[in-house]
Length: 350
Image (cartoon, rainbow, N blue to C red; front, side, top):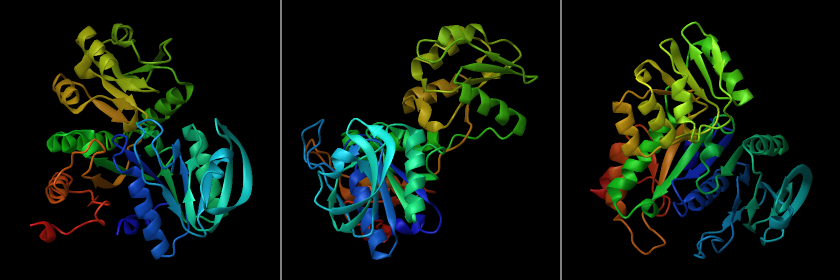
């Protein structure tokens, strides 16, 4: 069971998707049901809005979130009124969203709920801790579309990555993109204590900075890496060893730095974690061959991958081939087909 990976090992887990309709909510419902079967008290929140019957962006049907009695939820005041579960409000927080304040509730009569949680990673972590304080043994964070930030180690202890046919009509591309996401999540960490202290301070101050071989820090007057690659490259010298990016790292920035500096092979880029990198697998491989080296302050633990062989556009993959292919490539990470009931044994699909 998917819940077996989490039970007694982790307190806060994020569920993130490779795209919209990749199966995040199906995965969440699967975990909710398994937790209920095993008598595990859970908490649920979200980095966006989830649980509505019709997708607000695409207009397509989507699965609702079913919460069992005893479940703790953190949602907005307006979203609280949109489900049919009977919920006792036990705390009104000071955290605000476009749909009102975040409230903490406990499900008294099981039913469907809509979750509209906090907007920032700091607030998500704080709300998750409140749910634990009230009695949740495990908190599940439902990540919003294309917001992998909830998987960051500063928020959750591990993530479950949902992927599926919606990513591409080409199964091989879906597998490649999923592998790439997992690889970025597990970027090697910066290990040296002195260096980690410097990097933590730089990231907290939110300024792109360079560190030389003697641990001297040069702070650039740049708040974001977007369109700043040429400027950054001009400051890289023979003694530069690290370039620290407090925010996101995108393809165009890396390409401009690589083009603008011949010293790139002597430098390591450092990000907070792999959720901050936005470079596709083909470009990533090309840039790495050009000498790109990237590390993370903290790596992201991918506990499992769930797959959805169906796309709302009407096409689908053969479920057996898709599951077996994904399991073949993700040797060290459990893969679950939550649409068809969980982790099938290879011999079933021979």
